[in-house]
Image 1 (cartoon, rainbow, N blue to C red):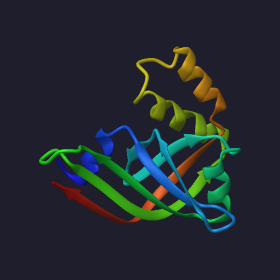
Image 2: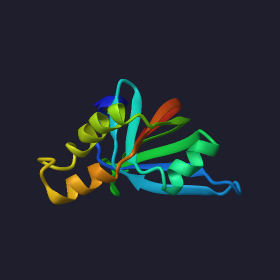
Image 3: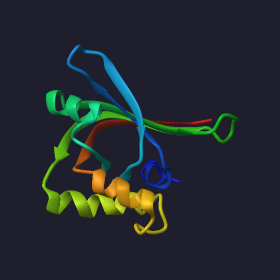
Image 4: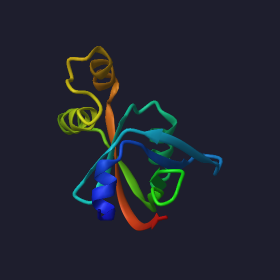
Length: 132
């Protein structure tokens, strides 16, 4: 399985942003990997969105396993930007949520969709992988 296929197949990405005091802020997020970019639905009030407005540099990590030979991961650095146009946000958010819910009719899925007012688009600048 290629690194891109691995990124597409996993469910949790940890994204690190930098706050206004220069401190890292790391959170696990749901995401979608498409055309070499990561997409993360969120709300503009979250710390990660606020941090990206001030500093677009991010790091990320996707990993699985605790015992060899099933340990694998991909990590990297990149630049993030906020997609804010509602006409673009909603379709991307739906695609992300459909990775985690069978239907968007689910109450939790609908709540998350309604709360998502922006999408973080991460363009990787460097990526490294490992497998043990």
